[in-house]
Amino acid sequence: MNDQRQTGDPEELAFIEEARTWPAPKRIFAYLRRGGPGYLQSAMTLGGGTAISSIYAGRMFGYELLWVAPVGMIIGVLMLAVLGGLTIGDSRRPFVAMGEGAGKGFAVMWAVGALVASIIWHFPQYALAGAAINDASQVAGAEIPAWAGAIPVLGVALLMSQLYGRSPRLVRAYENIVKVLVIGVIACFGLVVASTAGETDWGAVAAGFIPSFPEARGGVDSSVLVASGLAAAVGINMVFLYPYSLGARGWGEAHRGFARFDLFAGMLIPFTVATSLVVIATANTIPWMEGDAVQKMKPVQAARALGEVLGPTAGRLVFDVGLVGMALSTIALHMVCSGLALAELTGNGPDSRAYRLGLLLPVPGVLGPVLWDNLLWLVVPTNIICGLFLPLTYLGLILWARRTPAGPSRPRTITVVAMVLFTAFLTYSFGDYVVSKLG
Image (cartoon, rainbow, N blue to C red; front, side, top):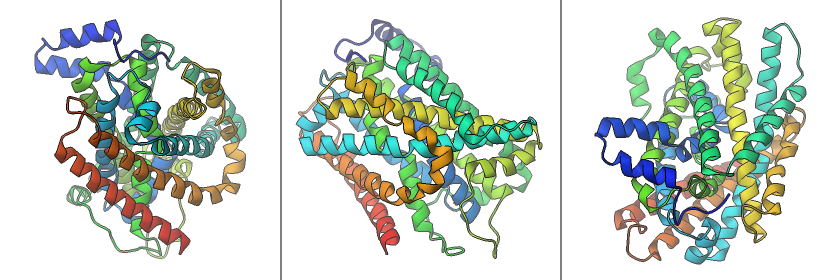
């Protein structure tokens, strides 16, 4: 993954220069087709964690927590926009730049948090993919065990992760695959919402985007789901991967405006639409009723229930394919993030043996279909570690931004104030979550 941020990829630069002369509608459409790093962030977060958080929120609180995902993503977009602004056109690798701008301790916490999150959260992705393949095989009249279904997913993910970063052209090809997966996930849940549109209270849906903390239901505290949803929206490993994806794409100074647009169009909108559709679809089809046993419905169980709306055979198959797509995109990006983090922590670059070894560190996650139920105890410490690392990383980003000389890379004062407020909000949310878990 060669660093091309100083000069930029010639093809990308030519596109940017030509696009500036086009009318706004044509330019926006071209940006949508050409964008990529933002879609990678959507793909990385649209995995098992997001599915579980959204399904559980929709089942327990209906439309009332629709605001959580977009708020978490807005915070993430602001932080990533600042991070992109600080690193785009910078010849230093992001880890090195963070260490020099905020302090080596912040850089190390950033990389360690990304590595831990990528490895631990690999297990539920394979559990999700394996369960979906198992369910699809049952619909087709066969019986593929979940553990066996996870193996081909590993093979495809290894190929995808090895291709990423070889050249800007291969990066674009990789990102186009990811776009298809993200659009497919949105389409799956969109079909259910469309099929149940007559049962949807659109006024309540609109009200659900206004922040609130509904009263506990069935012993489930909404603040815990809020913290979980915020953590699922933008994870520490996403924050780590983003500036490297800009470098891999060859984006430089000329791409600043394009990069901000890509975060909005490729990350904020798809993620908000996808999670909102999951919440609405779940609330419409499998709501929790007073007196029901309170338990977290697994994504594949939700797929069976939601798929029935579209048909007992075709509907379930559509959702199973969508869940495999969610897991696959996240798995491949976890591998890339793990490789980059290990390379930086060992003082090596992204073309090193350490990077290639790091790609393989999450591979034991393929045992997720067999082990994840027994590893659920890891959820609490991992949430605590990753949840605390994220505000600390944002604090490092604030320090880095304030120490940056005046110029296009330095964010405005109002942006820094918003960063401080958002970081304080996340710290409070995660702190409340930790207290509730340890209490």
